[in-house]
Image (cartoon, rainbow, N blue to C red; front, side):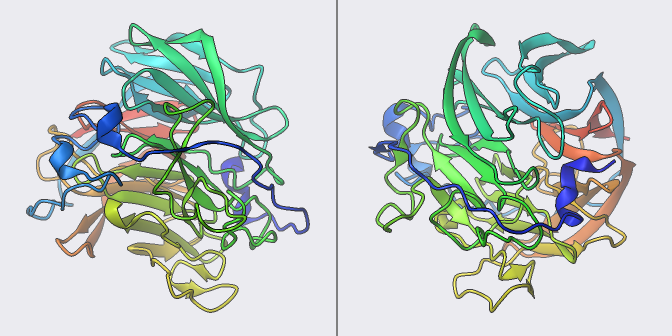
Length: 414
């Protein structure tokens, strides 16, 4: 049953949006000063250096390259079995860690998923869209951030100290919490950005059609992409370039807003571009691409727009339209699952293609984007990953497909 995406069917109303009451300090947004933008650090584009990024973390322009070959032959190779894999992240020593929705974290080995290095099964629940939803390592490798919902359904990010490359279950702190008014549209993905900051995607709070009107409300962190710095302060700091610091009542953590359920997003490790897939209401699934230097303050349009189409009102003047959209419950599926831009070396010709799927249609698909950032080709790569709810990217840039039914596949050349 597609419990992860009840938002497509659930209609609800009422409730109040959670209010931001944190006292997180503002911190200088100088990634180079604290070493979080070093070449090769997790979350930073390969080859990045201090000349490629200013204090806002803006990356260099995308290099000119030939368009990827979307007709290339690929295969899915099973590499691990878990109960319901939902997340993946690369540790400081290059190990790929897998998150299992019931609450465990495992290292991927040559023999599959190793024993749990973290076991949080008593602290979360898998009803609705809940559970362990995201993993990310700090840019300097010192902490692992686990994004999950607690037993009451609140969003929780816990940080675990990393010792000798392995997360230590006995060294833990709480970074962020937020009550959720409904059990759907939790979002929950976390990624370390090219600037070394931690990004958290949150849905609009749930219910059908955004009854809280959170998408266009910058006073709530719901319906937004948040940007915080857990290494700068306790429990976290807020970068001083975040766009709404000077707006009365605004949630200072917001980097971008206008989101319905940003279930999966990623940063291109070569260019720094954000790719964000936002699950639609009942008509359009959308994929957004934003150059990193244009991210702060971006408005993705929900609930005034669903994709490029009118939903609850006129298009906002600052709307950033999706780079690609497809019909909900159409041939491509009903609930988009965002992936990564392929930067591995195993599949000749696929370099630079953005890969994604759908929880209702497991076909692995790819987008080719030209130098102007426009999608010029879309293709089905001819392999089916099952109920695809997430992707992973290893240290070498190879991609993994996570099937909620239990199997983790690696994408290989056929």
